[in-house]
Image (cartoon, rainbow, N blue to C red):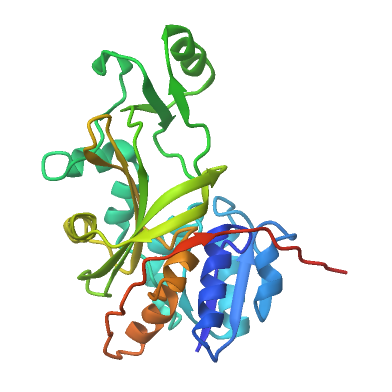
Length: 308
């Protein structure tokens, strides 16, 4: 069984490849990215440069890669192209390929931070979110792109001058209540029938450019059950990453949901839950055993790749 891992230039794609290797995956790993200098290319068995997700030839080139390498499973990890795999789920399935993505309507809810809030706020603790900064009434607040990904263009707004600057330069922003406390990233895995299996909670100790470089796996029944219930309510198929932060009073609130494997996937693998390997077991209709999770602290470091 050959597996395609898109987004080979990002930490989630690299985490996915490393997890498959650690799980003694016996098939071929094919990776793709629009950047020809993607480090994940050199961790996989084969790789292909592919157009960006919004390119008119993206699907055509993807199908060529699938046919060339006899790909059977797609493990999307990139926030840039994951929606394409859901949109074209039927076409890909007819090629005998299994994209591990949620239904298109689920993806649209997760993609739009305002829709996420409206879907969940009356059932779960979700950070107050609005398109109008006048609705929040006090500083500080957080401004972020409504359809953003990769932790880009997120601003803490301390006063009216900050607000005027951000709103003059960036459009289609959403405003969210400021949560100054501890941040958690929670990897959740649901089966292919949208039933949540397990959640692994990680305290983010230090981040760089939105990516966790120091994290502590913590067993927290409240967080785990909350995130599994959220995944069930939305209808997640396969993996998702749910991010939470504490308010000033210590209340945990959801800030966003990413319906894919996250950048810290390998942290969860090292703690005992190898999501990519477990997903392949699901595809093969094998019974899934829920692993024991170890509470560990993990430090991430850079590693060089030399190419000709």
